[in-house]
Length: 223
Image (cartoon, rainbow, N blue to C red; front, side, top):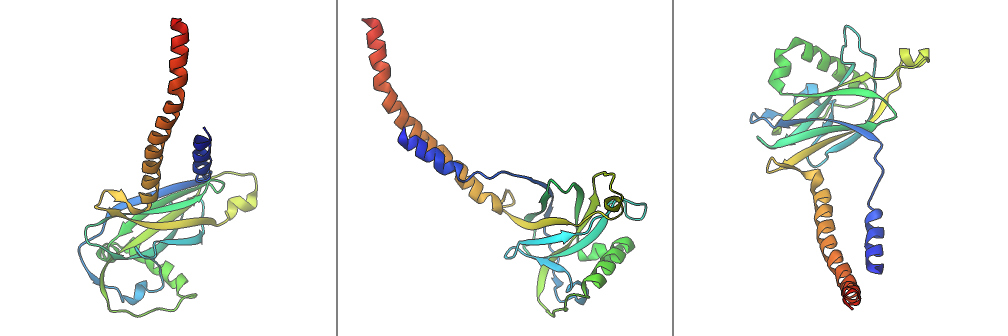
């Protein structure tokens, strides 16, 4: 019994309370390669499989006729593998009610749609005030991620209704293994396997302790 209590205590240490919302988009990386040194994208924040996570404070706004999905922000997804499945997740605290929408676009999609191009250009111009453009001529697979953030609450506070506060978010790029299983779930899968195997042996140990007692009680009833 001491062994069982010890195991349960160790597993309890791995349990964390979740107080967050998550939105995600799943996509296949394209096959077309582009020159990653396109100067118009250098001011964007970058997500890659080797640097898959960033934390930002995103501005939000209530939906309007001009921006029915809220405030738009753009990110650069680089170093992708051809035809590999990926997902991008955005996580934020449940105490900041927000409606997020995520979309990914290829370079040609941006060039062909005026509304997308205008939105991306405006966002890049705002980012260039705080960043220096880097130069690169490397050929690679990439996509552009658009995040739309709309405030999703109501309050009698007029100040908050006119200007909702920014939302702290984590943006995560997660490649899939064999286009089936998200890489980030490997620790969870290993935990479940260890838990199942451990439970099998612990249950066998407990049964070995209880079996003599059960046999004694059965014999006493027969007498």
